[in-house]
Image 1 (tube, rainbow, N blue to C red):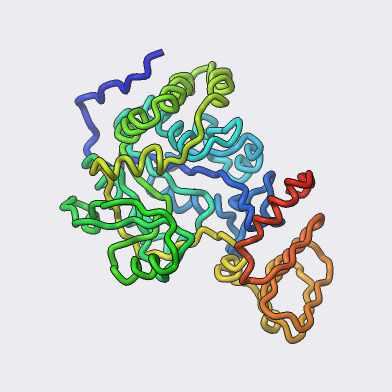
Image 2: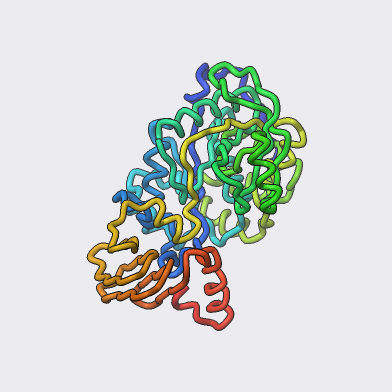
Amino acid sequence: MNTQIPAVPATSRAEPIDKFVAVIPAGGVGTRLWPLSRAAAPKFLHDLTGSGSTLLRATYDRLAPLTGNGIVLVTGEAHRDAVCRQLPELADGDLVLENEPKDSGAAIGLAAAILYMRDPETIMGSFAADQVISPVEKFQDAVREAIHTAATGKIVTIGIKPTHAATGFGYIRTGEPLAVAGAPSAHAVVKFVEKPSQDVAEQYLASGEYNWNAGMFVAPVELLLRHLKANTPDLYAGLMEIAEAWDTPERVAVKNRVWPTLPKIAIDYAVAEPAADAGDVAVIPADFSWDDVGDFAAIARLNNAREVDDVTVIGEGARVFTEDSTGIVVTDTKRVIALIGIEDVVVVDTPDALLVTTRAHAQLVKRAVDGLKAKGDTDVL
């Protein structure tokens, strides 16, 4: 098997946007949204904003105008049927099904390798399926700037201008502006920074030099694969072997043989951080609204839900009575839920599991999932 990156042909299409293909990694269970989000029905398959569109469908729809429907989706085999119902226009060859979770390095790297084998001049963008973004027009403008910047030979991340000193996000330290035609916002990246303490996050916010790392990036597939090969050669070799067979009858057999052997590593460690150290990363600071819907407090923020007194109620036909109470109720049952004299409560009611916590503890729901898993109660996970 040849794992060398073939030479890019001398002829080239003129416009960077014509080379662009979007990749949507749709993974993760969203354990902080249990019991609404489950392994069989993770959060990206749900309408969590009350918009009438699931997070996955909304992600696809805001990318389609940039790509002419040139979109590749990476998800778990268990979600194939649900994804195909929500995205019937997705071509079979553009649906990449993971045999088992292998982290973002393998998921995004395989999409890049497949796109490279189809056309080595491709510029790909990676955008998670479970984010809420508005307005769409500002997002699309930022992606267009990222595409122009990537065409100069950069891996380009889209940074979110921080609105508060968040400790739950990674940060990007922004460097000098870059003179890129079609991308007036482009800057060099000094480094990526892990999730900071509260004091450090406040320093980052005050400095104005940092953006949140939302995990969105645009890059020439050749450059991404070059860094992947340099930093994780075993992963690179396995992905290229699968990619070479992807558009052939051997796709399934090769993927089933090679995928279980691939190492687990995040794309940040495999590509982004080493590329930043090499001076190959740029950032487009963006000021659109962005939320990764990390807990039930986020759902309440984002949802145009009805209010029952001071309680936000989400769920069609919800039957909720409140008195002297505040908080959030999310329900997909017809059970009557009565709240009396409870402040800042979070109630999530499903047919087989009930969660009761407070808004302040909403980020800790993952502990319940871990505890149930340890006890063997996997039927509700």
